[in-house]
Image (cartoon, rainbow, N blue to C red; front, side, top):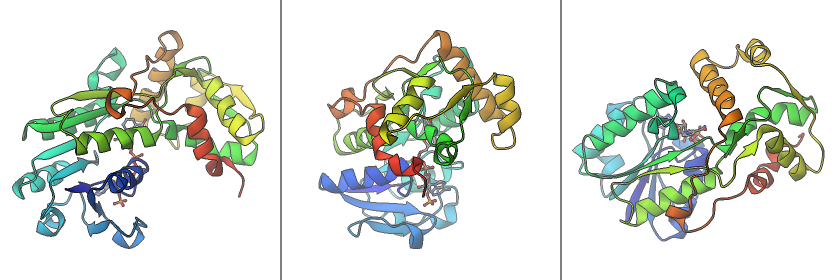
Length: 281
Ligand SMILES: NC(=O)c1ccc[n+]([C@@H]2O[C@H](COP(=O)([O-])OP(=O)(O)OC[C@H]3O[C@@H](n4cnc5c(N)ncnc54)[C@H](OP(=O)(O)O)[C@@H]3O)[C@@H](O)[C@H]2O)c1
């Protein structure tokens, strides 16, 4: 079976590629920069832009049985081309925001984008699985420069509790849904195994590094003032709403076990896997 992986050079995609190879699938990977892809030799790398139909010809799709859809802006072009070339079976990387479980999700940047991506696929074929992960543990890499430099992390809502998911668990859930027919037609929420306060998350990274990470609680207004130049307003609003709400209503874990058959990786494992990202060069 040949599986086309989009987003193959990303955090989820790279582990999806190696998981599929280890489970005996043939993998074709789509990237805009094939020369920089740095994927395993067994992978057939093809050039293409998910948002540009002119790059999405038969060289991308011939022989493909199933495809992993990375939710890039403009991905409708990819789905349209895939179906035109006879590919009808998809696993889609979406987001828990698309479930609109909380008022904060309605009309958020993530909800609008991921709901639209889901609709593109579910409106055109009936052989799909939608994965809706909650917050990625990789979002904590935004603290990497402070941690590397020894400067204190300055963050609001330290007592709010989220259940960050390891990218490997998202990838392994995706692999399972591409390789088996068991989850066809399912929309699957996924999170990390445990809700942890932001203070606990920092402490866990510190344990992986063998040192205490200085942490200072600031107000949401201070956070906005200090980071507005790096964080676009729709994303800022989404983050502050999420941390505010999870102060009183912590994330409820949505275990990956339902798909992978194994418990999700603890944040401590993620921190150990990413130690190099937090260590000074
Ligand atoms: N962060 C969260 O908390 C969260 C929660 C739920 C869902 N998500 C979803 O997960 C995504 C992040 O996944 P990730 O961490 O694996 O991503 P990532 O590491 O940022 O990698 C992005 C990948 O997308 C590919 N890509 C982007 N635009 C493309 C285009 N126009 N054509 C072809 N390839 C394109 C890139 O490929 P090339 O550069 O090689 O072309 C790269 O492989 C988010 O964008 C969001 O949709 C995130």
